[in-house]
Length: 411
Image (cartoon, rainbow, N blue to C red; front, top):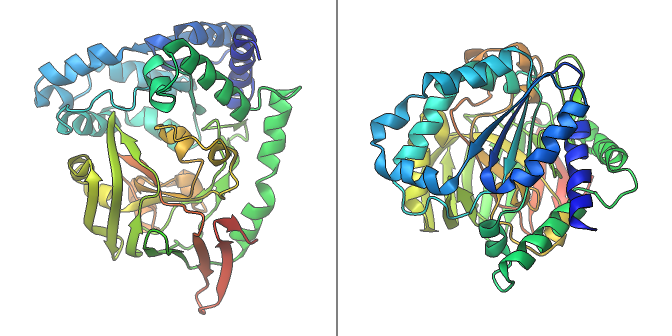
């Protein structure tokens, strides 16, 4: 597909289906400078859809790296008032929030990891209305990606820069179903394709999940809270407005009980966290808590993550993605969690989802935790799915329910 046409179709899809933008609604966009040509198309689409105003928060990785290098740690422990006000006011106004990811996977390599960790914690504290609006189903949010030279070069190191970017655009276009006659209709069909499996899992009365993989050594059991809900294939606001929090998406997910995880889980793909790589890592859990961890590369990154708060050492998400995922089918490692998490089953340390618990959208953090859903300032997805992964559901009476065998759905 010709690049300009691809970008235009992408922008339209994101505004129409990803954000389901309504007339009179404001929009906040977070984007890298390198994505400016695409961002302009999104802004135009938003205004043509009736947006009351569009605010773009630009980020430049080189100056961000300078900020982290030269500013003292204390500066990262509080969000400047204007930044918090922009986010919180947008949320209170019912605004939609779009993040366009194009990050260099190694943008912050060598930066003191305490600084981005402190910033994440400060953001969740000082921008609580902003994050609550997304977590409680009051504000639409959507995360997508657009190519940058450094990101494309990491995926296609043997291609010239311009060709690598063009190739990545075409890959993203395919995964976003932009080659369909009507991409929005294709995404609605994709949304419906999740319903049967979600219905089965939500009616199965499971108490726990057991994951095993002989190829990596994963042997982990996680408990589920009473009243769990499996979600996926899109989301809805409390008023019923549909949207897609992540595009692409191939996952069906839930929030495990924060006190019930035992065993060991090994990564199956590298992780890019806050611009730093973590590779060949594992976590050992006891009574829901990480009690040991290893990493061939980036162990210090994990150390800082786990120190963020008391919820950072516990699980907030369990997501099931079969090995037949179209993202896995590309044969590419994207070095980007938005894509890589949709290529393989994954878990997340940190915050769970209020939408994954009956009545959770009306609960505060203390109530969620009392019902088994983890709370934290972080949410870090990591992939552990393998072609030989088995997932078995366990009911309270000990009955076993096969869910995955050899990396594929059984149900």
